[in-house]
Image 1 (cartoon, rainbow, N blue to C red):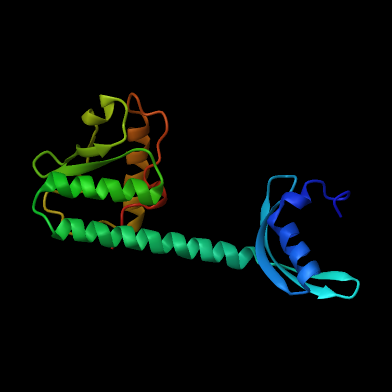
Image 2: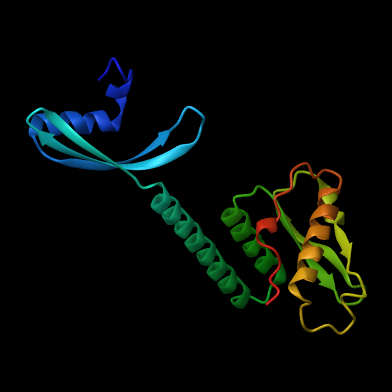
Length: 195
């Protein structure tokens, strides 16, 4: 086996194989396999001692593993949202609240930098309110003029989803054009909620 798979003796699977052969006890574990093209797959390996050596049953569990990883990711996002909710209701200090929100957002989205723009009720401009992780001061000047036709003075209800999506796309484009913004990871995968 070591001639066919050089280096296998240094893997956790080989230790289990040895244990299964010597102790004659079944073993099982999950293994992530990387193909030569860089793609990966997860396999559950079940080993049973047999008179000829060891019988290995390999079951592809990639889909269930990906689903479990996605479920864990969703759980972390919900946990972050809960912590943001707690931060919002536990203080009246806006700067503390925004700092807590930014901390949770950057951690849950796994980004280095994020900022929050708040709507100025008089000028209908989204203005920089707080930021985290930016290396230049260019973001401090970030603002976005809300189109009056889509966001009238007394709007109380979010516009239809397509309008929110257009707004998000335009905002991403304008923020990406700011000086000093080299890589942008807005919650672009998490657009503003239209609900």
